[in-house]
Amino acid sequence: MSAVSDVIVVGGGVSGLTTALVLAERGLRVRVWSRDAAQDTTSAVAGALWWPYRIEPEALVGAWSLETLRVYEEMAAAPGRTGVRMVAGVHGGERLAALGPWARSLEGASDVAEGLRVTLPLIDMPVHLRALEDRLAEAGGVAERRAVRDFAEASAEAPVVVDCAGLGARELAHDPGVRPVRGQLVVVENPGVDEWFVQADPASSETTYFFPQPGGLVLGGTAEADDPRTEPDPRTAREIVARCARVRPEIAGARVIGHRVGLRPARDAGVRIEAEELPGGGLLVHNYGHGGAGVTVAWGCARAAARLVRRAPVG
Image 1 (tube, one colour):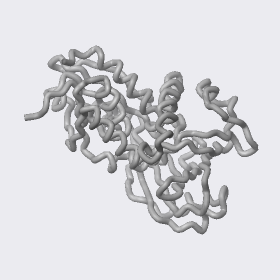
Image 2 (cartoon, rainbow, N blue to C red):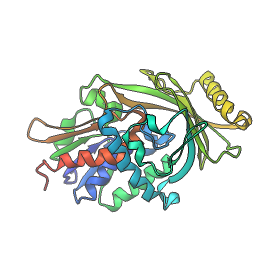
Image 3 (spheres, helix red, strand yellow):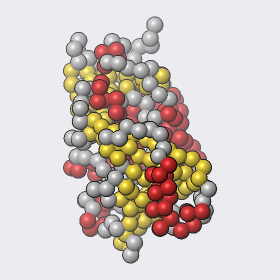
Image 4 (cartoon, one colour):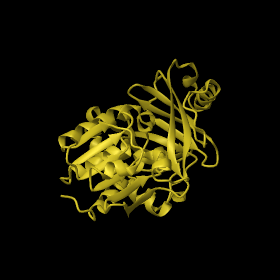
């Protein structure tokens, strides 16, 4: 017999766990249903630098991002436990005045010859996901490995279902605008790089970035729309290393220690946060379509979705 729940969150990546945590810390009885363990989700292979990259709608993303930034700044006080560190770096080619109004809230950001220099949250995702799971458990939430074929399965066991299914929302929410954007990374032994660098052209499928993480220097990357391949491509890996080495030549000789591929859950119309009634009187709250910026907007979107849950007849 399943445990009595107020809410079932479908999806166990960073968006699902963060949303579940917000709800559980409000005192609701929350279960997370996820086909994959958190360490096997797309979130686990993210870079993961805070930055509102390739995400819409523009009118809402800034506020969601800044709300999340404030949470990460607090978490950075305990990086070993949370996986969050504040690290300096450069966004190549960017200028503060060319960014949205949200950028005025970035403390210490300044234009330099190479681009925009700023200190931002850099997140070790395996550690961070474990921290979210631990905090969820402390709040009374339960994470379960369970594949979901239809939201009706969840609504039969809780009056509220929250859809954080990522790419799975294409089928579950019958949303053809959900599509994979393939990202490939290379992890090398860090040759002494202690700052991050990003140079991204939104019109290109190729980006150049490196992030110094505890487990190595993470090099990237790609943004290949509608490419479902999950195996690393050797030629792409060589090109990633070469691009990064043009910025920091010492990267060229660094020993490769791993490859990562993740399918970012993008949505043509941007992030979807809205509620709808389910047959039988249940409430379905959607929170998906974050693309490659799920980490960046996790807390802002989770709180926006949680506000919709208040409409539900939870006990």
